[in-house]
Length: 498
Image 1 (cartoon, rainbow, N blue to C red):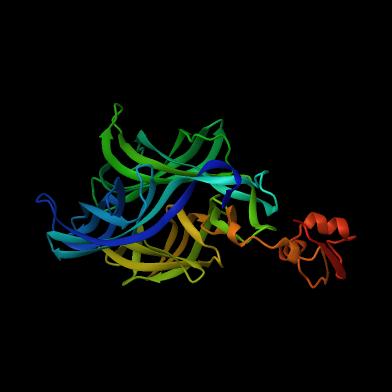
Image 2 (cartoon, rainbow, N blue to C red):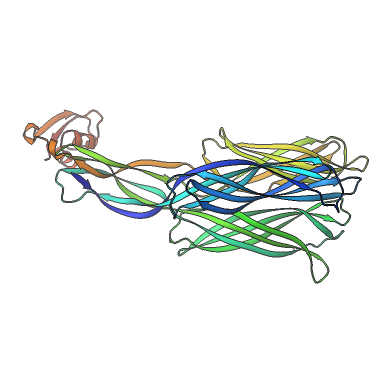
């Protein structure tokens, strides 16, 4: 005979798949006929865009696009120029148990971009792209479990605990459109040779069932003047605010992972004769929210009338979804290939991020563009590493900020101070077992006459629950018959309770 408990259930979400996939992609591009030959490559600035997420019979197929701008020194001291490359790619994640309601969230990042000169008119770019997939599905969770009233001789051990549940998983597409003035005291910019965009979330507030997400889009563009020998970076910050209906009215914390799906940058002339940067960005905000709830569950049960078999169900809860900022910092003295008379620019590219052996590690490629003692343009590539202990934390990287770099030339050396900020969430989970039903074996019912009415035992560290279960009694009856039954270490009288 199977006995079902009286359960109160709510709808929650559960993460049932977390995977990482990496892919190496390559593409080639030819220098336009109007530009000079390549003398030396300075840097490659790259980006990755999420284009689509599709459920297939095998799992989830991710489509994206890789973009790179190869910056180089032109032949014959013709200055700085660039050539652009775009490459579509796919990542396939195998996953079971996918349904049409499955919510898939994806984070794409480049773990390295390298470039080589095939010949003075052609370059080849190699991309190392990593995709991180989190799949969520809806399910019913029992938050209050009780015994039915009509079953005699059945007892249950209950436990109350505060748990963290995923109560909302959703996403929203957004767009950012701005025209940013490029005022300059020197030569006006004539060419856009590289751009980077990072979306950062600073605050989330819940009003009713509407979540107000605030943040900023951090832009960094590299421009060339008409002379073409002095690139310059310009940084911009564009605030954004979005309202997302998450369908619930309680939230303890949230995790928002922006993913850029497309970008457009262009230099335009304004009506006052100055240059401006025309920007259009498209992104998707991927959101997970959690709340704290009181859970009253049955962790053990027995019958005084017959043997029983428990129907146990595992429960898994998140510990904390709140995002914390982790900063990596380093100061390095980096040697160049020759003395530097003027440091023109330093291009930084994040090439590797890893959580391993209790450390958060990152590698940053630094491309130095400078003039040597003869006044000739030159370039040098070096790698800086950053690392910090995270102990036993099981973190998930939610967002990576733009590297902050302070560089000062000193002869053949450059002194660099580097700061890199990560938004991280704790991936640890709490798991426990609950009992949601019981099977009673009526054919092997206990012979009541063979059981003693009263048993005297010496208590040796056993709980009252364990004693009641062992001697066909109940905690309540044991307390009635023994003074200070909870704390005594002496003899206990155990009454039969059938």
